[in-house]
Image 1 (tube, one colour):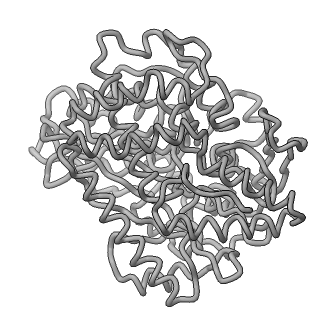
Image 2 (cartoon, one colour):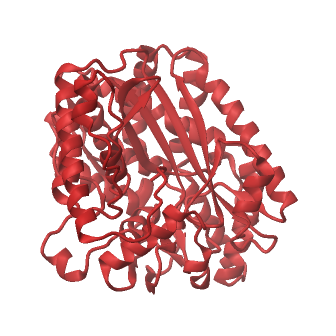
Length: 503
């Protein structure tokens, strides 16, 4: 969705041409995977973080364009909501102390953004869902003025043919908050609820021959990632899932009517339905199952002709189409310095709570990926795809409270799984990547202590609001009090497991 789209309306013929062009891109990619060299250099990683802006009353601030102008740096870009920003850090390798430098760079970049936000009368919030959002904030007028987002809004609502419906039943399986689960239902006449989801996206460039293994491993890990990284328990005043961002994103991007859902039509926010053997499996599914949302095509380009002429095709239509299908682990095709490559884009984690927590989450993921991919017997050969998806949903609902299924361990609480088995595997994987031991120790110890304390961003938010409500605050006041403390702790870059509760 980072590609520019200079059209607002599309004809039936546009859609027909676009479908044919996507198929032509798929044919070219199939040839390239068989015959064309892809990047063989040291695998590169990348990181994107979506951010929120709030005003002095902690309501969403629509000053995104002004803050971007004040920052004046290309790594900061607009996002769907006018209260959102996105920070894209340049690719870097994993070995050595690279990710320690990344932590410092990320701290510095966010400090610049915070300073620029203050100059524009706003504050920066690094959090999965802004807990002070209200229904009147999620309207078409709050969307970014970028033409591609306006077009996306029109096309998604047009495809759906009726308002966006949110219907999320909350859950508190531990009972520790002593209250009944809450239930949110609401209709919206724009895709603005999608802008309420702010995530951290992790990229890993891999060779096409090993892509399937890395994608399958990432799917296995999605539930664990959510369990230890949840940070989005509140939406529109309601206490819902540990990572409410998951059902919110799924529902706010759902262009299916209830009838199409009942028929089994696949959603555009998708976990998937099977293990894969090639990156081509995913791109082919995208073309086979999903109609175009923005059928913009360059009629003058022909990817097969580019190949025959010895050029590397951009596969623009394939990439644009791929950008409108939001898999939690998404395949990416790109060209850098004239050389094609493919990446796994991991979209599972929320933003926040702090830089050090986000870097710890990232290295935990990258380390486990390497170990699982190089295991003598792949984990996904011992685990059904349905079990991986169930783990994902369970972790999103319950965080550390919900047991996950893991081969060799059966049903096990996520913190116990991480402490007993996954932390040593993550350390081993990072050693194989060539990450320095002191970097590994620093960041994996944060995951360890988070599990020992059983304190994630989500649980801190829930316990803080519960404490403020017990002291007599109503829900709205408690959410504001919690967010005020959250912003202070987040800016200090102390890991969330060390944060004190109110009182």
